[in-house]
Image 1 (cartoon, one colour):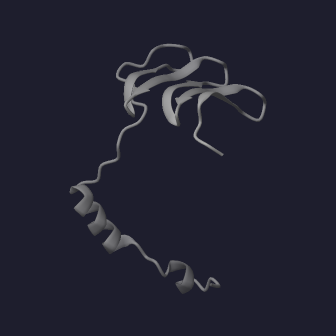
Image 2: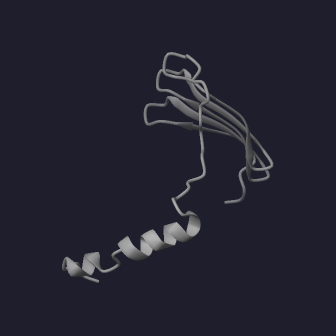
Image 3: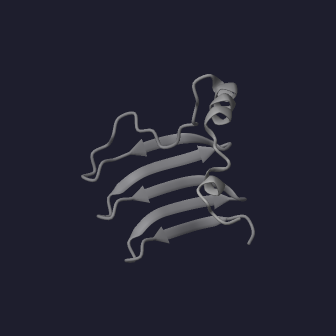
Length: 102
């Protein structure tokens, strides 16, 4: 399968539209998400891989002020803080300690 190009629509198991997306040369240019009732949930456009226009609505169609669609995750202490947290808390032998088979 190659890079997406053009319009792609996604539907739930009942045939209800949940996403309408546009791609150019594999890059997302527009996303529109819908609630099950058909109302728009979010509208996002991208340019240079960054969000350009971001709007969101509640299920009744009322616009949500300062709507955030995607936000880069940050960890206290930055990348070093994340590594420190993982080093302290990641338990790689949990399954084996519980008797799971390899």
